[in-house]
Amino acid sequence: MVAKQHKFLLEESELPTRWYNIVPDLPSAPPPPLHPGTLQPVGPDDLAPLFPMELIAQEVTGDSYVDIPDEVLDVYRLWRPSPLYRAHRLEEALGTPARIYYKYEGVSPAGSHKPNTAVPQAYYNARSGVRTLTTETGAGQWGTALAFACAQYGLECKVWQVGASYDGKPYRRSVMETFGASVVRSPSELTETGRKMLAEDPEHPGSLGIAISEAVEVAAQDDATHYALGSVLNHVLLHQTVIGEEALLQLAKAGDVPDLIVGCTGGGSNFAGLAFPFLREKLAGRMDPLIRAVEPASCPSLTRGAYAYDYGDTAGFTPLLKMHTLGHDFVPDPIHAGGLRYHGMSPLISHVYELGLMEAMAVAQTECFDAAVTFARSEGIVPAPEPTHALAACIREALACKASGEEKVILTALCGHGHFDMAAYDAYLGGRLVDEAVSDERFADPLTRLPQVGG
Image (cartoon, rainbow, N blue to C red; front, side, top):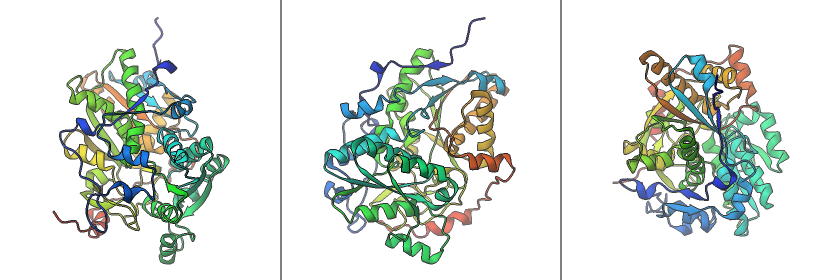
């Protein structure tokens, strides 16, 4: 019997040396961010208090590709290229004729895809003379990644961790501190935003929007301090395309072309990182995959949010972004979706969705953990809660192929491992994990407070 090939690797020499920007290839450009005071498109000077000019240039670039600096590639080589696996054992467990592949980003120092952007963000900030980066983190993966990246370039790192995550994941906090970061529970007494929230609810569970406000508030007060964002913005999605560029080469080595690409979405960076290089190929007529985003049923910005201008944070410090949103002051339940608990979706992904170039679905958390356990017991990797949403959708599709006999090729991004998320697995295995009953009323009130933008 011939052994099945399970892992598809790239040589270090095949590591992509450019990030891909999808904007020039789209049928129309996405709407610009607006200044919240003037409602005019923001310029570089508006963003300069938070970001170095090189990142601002990447945010608005019209170039299809941006060269990856050698100093960033040197750090990438600690874990990149990351492996692509054919999920033979999962396929056998499901009895499906589908061929399932997953791009595994859990091999990074932070255990997720997040260092793909944390490293260049820290690099560009250090090169510009910044001494401190502030940020927020939901599940802890972004905070861990930025703490690691700051350590590579001698920067101080201050992380506001969403309260529900801070309380439930003490060891994730320990990893950030091991890399040298200081970690604060959000909402905190250190900012005006945090004090206001705690005055309303001393045990506030926090949200990514609140934690962003706190980190931005602190960064804006010091010229030597900048803010770093782990998802949503164009330059973040740009950096993550190293995932999809590698996956294209690896699938070619496997001799397959995807029929379906599935990724989890919160802010959108992991999904875009995998999907955008394949969408480029689709737009050029070289392949025709269906591209599907999967989000939590309790925080469904794409499937149940409004497509409107909104703040990226709760306090309204950020520019107005045209995106799918549940409202900037929406506070999701402290579900185990971790980093997917964000009120809005990347403006670029929202635009791609509005163009009809992808589809979206929402999945409840118990189905996600059903999928996670099935995956772990067959493939041997305990996934982070975020990619369990994509795994649930993959399993649905694979079982549909079983019923129809169709041999689809399914590609997904396993964007991180779940080694610091075992409280969620403990709740699931102990029968304590429940799905929130999400009514339309749950989302209606925050959407009444969207910023009023004419035209």
